[in-house]
Picture 1 (cartoon, protein in one colour):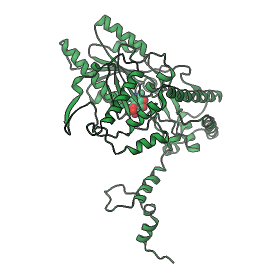
Picture 2 (cartoon, helix red, strand yellow; picture 1 turned 90 degrees about the vertical axis):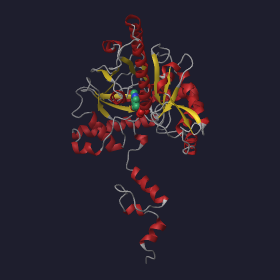
Picture 3 (cartoon, protein in one colour; picture 1 turned 60 degrees about the vertical axis):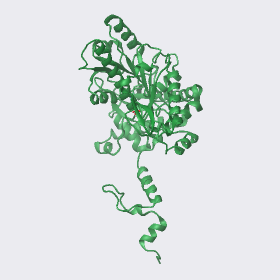
Picture 4 (tube, protein in one colour; picture 1 turned 135 degrees about the vertical axis):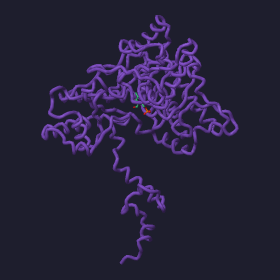
Length: 458
Ligand SMILES: Cc1ncc(COP(=O)(O)O)c(C=O)c1O
């Protein structure tokens, strides 16, 4: 016989949320116990994709327990309170100096932590715009119509910057078989109103780099022939933590004269959880002084160059942890391990006879971009992505490339630190199994595809 009323049973067994809908539309009148609230949130998240099987994302999904401990122990520290937390600010600057060294900055430099590459790009591009204004004003030229040149292979944040900050985007289109840009594409778009050229190191789409040395050569030539000093910003969101370790002899950073600023996401191949990014200038003079705010905050003058203000300090410490924990040797080891497994996956996919691998042999992020070999099947890459997710839970995105390569559909699997060789083999056989199912049923239906959505992944 039941001896409790309902309220007592809830209090004792602590799972009232299981028989009620989750609060969602109005501010809850009364609360629940910490255990109930924790389990409610946990149960909801169980229905999401498993980050470990998310091969769409560039973002870190695993850190060492010691790093996790640093993060957990510092969640209460507001990074922006430099007066109270001067060591946090110093650790940020140590990271900036280490990155400047990694990227071969020639002398004294400056930079900052950001929420990710998007904020870093907004700030870097704002500095390009301000420095361009200074040049125009010095030459008594108009500052009405700034433009920025970049390829269709960039992340959406570059167009976002142009719209938010009133700059004309001059976008070089891609073409079938050509998924990055070079100097010949850029040259026709340059004029006295060009605030800069943005080049990508490791595109979101196929993981390759723009011809950065070629563009640098072009910009030097334009400086000499047309007296236009156009700077280049490198979007190294993913690549700036990969190239220094996998391709140390490749030229893309401050060794090239026109490269004035670089962004990188600490939360991608910097191997830190989201959100942390970095912006590094070649020289202190490349940061437009007008963009730095000096304020008297809680009795101390503080200089800030950010779009956000308050934010956690944990990820800065986690980045510093990785730098001192891994060093160049450790990062090189991790990157090579990922590259080896990516190459194994590429070889496996080719060996199935069903797929062609895109841009194999070129310098590339540790990932595999692939598509069905032409005329192979009655279904396409989106069907495979769906079937694979439905059968085995892997999230491998399928997407079309930007204009004018929009007819090309590809799939892309990130091969991260946690992807073992065993998993590479399993993924290969799971993809083959999904294809066998599709061979039998001839594709997926709209309704099926609507059930599982896999984004491009960032
Ligand atoms: C080339 C590139 N630039 C910028 C970004 C935006 O980076 P974040 O997500 O760190 O803001 C991404 C994200 O995938 C990217 O791949």
